[in-house]
Image (cartoon, rainbow, N blue to C red):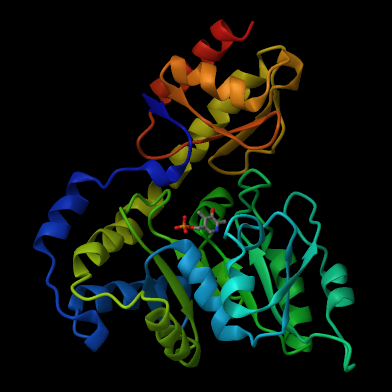
Length: 340
Ligand SMILES: *Cc1c(COP(=O)(O)O)cnc(C)c1O
């Protein structure tokens, strides 16, 4: 099976499994797990923030950030197809009690002027704007990189209005690899950031949130409230350390495979690649084949290749550590054969 559904399907490497076995552990709720502490220090350092916190998932990390930054009744600004709005089961409403105000981006990029316009003024009728969220890379925009310059401009608006800025950076390291820069180029323009260890970086579980010490102190409490305070969790932090030290530098390979896939699929007459393929995601439109994305995905599955439906006629493929260039060539050939 060639599994291109997501980079979350990556299995821990042999080195990760060994590290997991050998990890020194303690009760992390008491702050006594040395491996977790090491991971958090390393992550804070890499992300250029004072402190970091190991959390169970990207969704939990984002939700803790929203809970920490806002008050019930606040309004948060975010992109219309952002993960926090689109894919987190309405959690910001259910837990933080905030309402969302969405901004339609261009390839995931929000115009700083729209943000400025949407920030609420002082009026008893209005909710207070409690948080601005940005997603980099932007998943539904096909792994699009939000440019550093755009983040800089949005951060300036946020600062001017004294509103915190959170970055959902589930795939922020892909953004950094794509433009061949250090991740701090991006993180210098946000207050807090969430990154996933369990996607392209290949760790089995976990995310990191990072920000000021003050932020992490309250975030830790929210994590506990949500049931995310874990005990001898060094066994999961150990693969996370390898994710951050060894796996970050190979993401460009996944991006190259995505390029190969996109150019191969572009050569197939009735298939359109609809995204720019900045990183490890390729989105195609199968409309001209007169099949739905579900039918397309089903037929592919019968041929041992997995993708995901991404809209009525859109299909997403994601490259990652567990797919080779050979798999990519085979995928292109299979699609060419099956969908003439
Ligand atoms: C995957 C993803 C998340 C959520 O991560 P989980 O670990 O699956 O909860 C959040 N934001 C973006 C942009 C993602 O792609």
